[in-house]
Image (tube, rainbow, N blue to C red; front, side, top):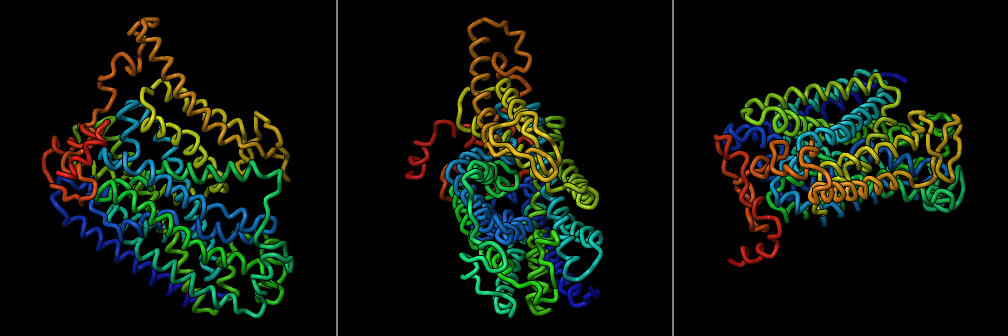
Length: 578
């Protein structure tokens, strides 16, 4: 394949446009308020992200390279089809559930990161433990989509895959480094527009190619392969449900999501953003579904791609760039490539910022340096943005099973963090002992279930398991959901058991070594004044917030509403009426 100068020019134009928007947003951040609030402006954008930008950035966080490429692949692969393309419905429902039940309590209490409530209730050490699966999820996700981007670009313009990964990672890291959430949010607007326009422009040209059969016919009839609508065999129903619950419920406890929730100007806005993003995810999946269907409806021996088809060549995961390359005119394929590149960066920058935000605030500041200045926290964030960006790039270049690592880490987010989030927000009386027990029981059940992507044999063989082509046993039983439920109930049972044993005098207070029951107000636990600010939350949920930018550290960590939120929902209406 010859080197395409036009393709390289298109990529450069897209990247320069995104970089310019990111730098402009960084300038906007720098000129917003005083330097005293700089770290919070980077993490949650000064809590003044409006509906338009907020809706775009929350949608773009999910609609990334993996979402677009993965949806097209699922529809294309024979035997799977649209029935197994779970991401659009799963992530949309995830955003709806998050908006209905999680956005309001998190935003109303004025937290800055997803880990804040864990450190408030369970203490600093538990916050550190939960940081591990959260970090793994963000880092491996960023590495996986960088890897996908490199492969996508190399398919169309025949550029070295390593160069394309490094350049893309440098640009995403650069504007995240200087602008934080503002840069990520405003570049998301540009990126989402590019994705929508680029893919929708490509679809009609691909459909009209002479080698493509009517997708309405191939949806229900076998022409070149099995119908692309797909089927779910009775043996695979539990696997389908397990994966669907993982996407729907496991898509909630991510810092990338809560960063948008916590940056919105009110709790009500946070809920509306979630609902807007759910609709956006469905809309943005449509061109990817159509491209997957086009790939399944194409006589590839009549195209320049030639026989055999992408499935036989084991390039099914690249069906979207292949359709752009071989079924669209040159200028359209390059425009679509820019769209996919934009999609990748819109997810990668979010993951890098999320990981650095949690580290700088919950590990460095709240666990080790509570008296750190705002400038110090900003520099810690900048350093970790660079380090995490470099680490994700290195994994994308060096690791042979990045996607396997991401699947495992996303499972851990579902199995460990989601039940802990349920307990910390909605179950009164849970404590650190229950949280630790639930953490390790969930982790144990997940690891012993095996992981085919990493060639890990299971230690527990659930009913219905079978060996794959590599003789690695695959589970049909919904063991991931079983592990999540076990973690949830273990947390509750152990918490109440520990509470009873200490409060009844069965165990002496000196054995409460985690200060979780007897010493409830120890230095190990974060109080609300340490976690949230007084000047960025108002009791009137419908009013936008105009934060006061203070130079003093003491005012940085106090929040009037956080003290009044517990059992205060009836009072909110009275406040609004007054």
